[in-house]
Amino acid sequence: MTKITPQPGILDIAPYVGGASQVAGRTDAVKLSSNENPFGPSEAAIEAFRRAGFDLHRYPPTDHAALRGAIADAHGLDAARIICGVGSDEILHLLCQAYAGPGDEVIHTEHGFAIYRIGALAAGATPVEVAENERTTDVDAILAACGPATRLVFIANPNNPTGTMIGAEEVQRLADGIPDTALLVLDGAYAEYVEGFDGGAALVDQRDNVVMTRTFSKIYGLGGLRVGWGYGPAHVIDVLNRIRGPFNLSGPALAAAEAAVKDQAWVAKCRADNRRLRAWLIDVLEGHGVPCDPSEANFILARFTDADEAEACNAYLLSQGLIVRSVAGYNLPACLRITIGDEASCRRVAHAIGQFKEGAR
Ligand SMILES: *Cc1c(COP(=O)(O)O)cnc(C)c1O
Image: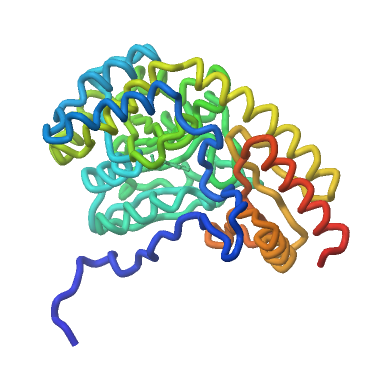
């Protein structure tokens, strides 16, 4: 037996399993398992990425000033209080590393994003799971779970994998009610899909205990480049910048993200298409006897009779070259999470689920 062991907590982390991307023997498979933008990134982002290829011998800037400036312009924020990371995952990890350790508690919701628990355990802290109310964040339950050891409270709004969201008054109530020693983290990975929603930025501006995280992986269609950002009070951004790797983001990633955030017309187009196709898909699935919660994001959570039926439907969809996400690992064994694809993909999924329900079983 080796005497070389990792820090406590690390071996409690189950390795993250991403959405599958291939079906053996099929070339026409559609990946609807990772909430990617089916239309890809803005043309301007692709062009900026190509141009950045000519400067690969140069180290990238460490301050991300151009990208922070472009984000601040697009959202009306203070560029000095923006931090950019390798996906929002890095920001979430930095928050755990900086603010939680052994003996501290990190709250996340019942069906919350896996990284909150992973980040807490990696920092040696104790993750605390709080029940939701009908797959929706329950502010009272979170407040009841808070105590003197609470250091971080993570909610995604809209949430993944449920797609539901809570309103500004509820978020404010959460920020007001958590202990003085805790930070509220608003994960806005899907914020751009909600028309007119600021992801919680206004609340961040009003307080010293709220941080917002955002990503270029979802509506911006740049998941392959790994760029995310955070917006918070000056004291938090200062702390995170001390532990952030100085060259965490590559030149091409910075260039593409900057061009992407400047192309808000592309974002608006993707938001509108997603909204239309999501409403259509929810409607058709309900007609097939598969209810879905109202989703504010670029995916839906389809509910089956039980875990067996969800698993059988998942197998049937796979046999049709349709890759959706099993969410049994998120404690939702009777559900499947389906990313809103382009129109053809949505039609294929709707058709296949209809066939399955009618007796392909
Ligand atoms: C996809 C997703 C993210 C984004 O992760 P990146 O590291 O930015 O790709 C963050 N939070 C939630 C809830 C997500 O679903």
